[in-house]
Amino acid sequence: DAGVTQSPTHLIKTRGQHVTLRCSPISGHKSVSWYQQVLGQGPQFIFQYYEKEERGRGNFPDRFSARQFPNYSSELNVNALLLGDSALYLCASSRKTGQETQYFGPGTRLLVL
Amino acid sequence: AQSVTQLDSQVPVFEEAPVELRCNYSSSVSVYLFWYVQYPNQGLQLLLKYLSGSTLVESINGFEAEFNKSQTSFHLRKPSVHISDTAEYFCAVSDLIKAAGNKLTFGGGTRVLVKP
Image 1 (cartoon, rainbow over the protein chains, first blue to last red):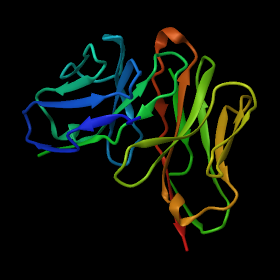
Image 2: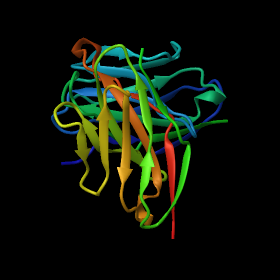
Image 3: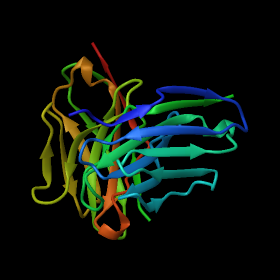
Image 4: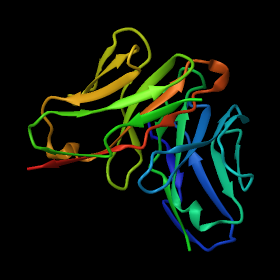
């Protein structure tokens, strides 16, 4: 089975623009989580979705939003990009929430100029 | 709120020598514990996890970690490292409360550089 896939792999944007990142979970996984990893730091939790509903939100501004589709894929949207949004954005999937192990995709590296 | 502290940001080690990566956590509830590895320019791969049962857990590539509840630690060890173990290692926790989902809280990471 394919692992978690993310697109695009790399992205360059300028300040003030909007970006959409995409994630496809492992087949059979119904939960998707998003993390931001700034260079030199550990990943920080942004959102979790399960069965198309938001189940958790980290300490990120309202410029960050996400959604999950009926096929369990997910999009992360970031509006009004700031230089500080430059990071590796990681998507993780699990069968459900609670006790399930999360499996990560390769990430999308976003550079904001 | 949970927090994870990885006490060493970088650990240089010679090939075939042992290595220990330290991880301490703080949580008001019981937790699950994980170690993830990140190779250069890649995402995170699960190395091993502690959910319940034996406090000593092992991975398929020779790493092991021991959960110590009294010391709130989950240190990672390998008795003999290879060049291919050069990577960044992240300790993470998630709490046992199902309603809270399985959000992971990560430490800052430990960069392991294996020298020949």
